[in-house]
Image (cartoon, rainbow, N blue to C red):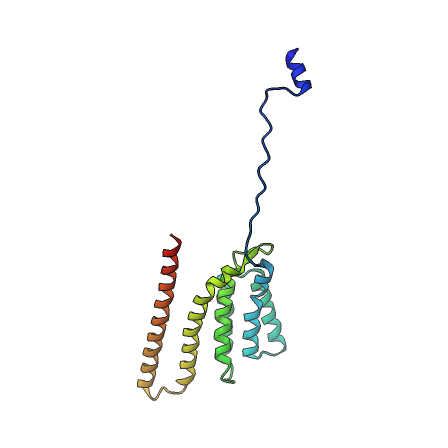
Length: 195
């Protein structure tokens, strides 16, 4: 009888109610929505389109590739898109001097943005600090790639002068080694500071 009375009054000795967990707030820096980051993958595709100056149906193919990469920015799909741009470039007639630097920027930007956007869901947010942290490496690699593109344009038609090709390649290798060494030092220094 005592047990029934205890239940009625609320004095039972069953497990107590768990206390509510304290409210937690997480403060983050400025962030970009995941869908904006994924749609940003379209920008390098459009830059490549401007550099290739496609016509009617080619713009449709380019837009389809861009939307496909925005929906699923997987590394293999990005590589196929860049290979497609390279094939078009091989068969296209040479145009202005600005075409190759723009394509180098577009292909590297596509690789970088797709790598950042792939693990991000549409409904998440990415802090700008994450993107800002990867920017120095992007710029160093872009500098080496633009140097390679400029060297390729300078040496176009220079095959009869083999020493010029060798000197250009040695210079490019030296610049690339210097930049990648600086990049590796920057990453190693960043890891030391974290631990």
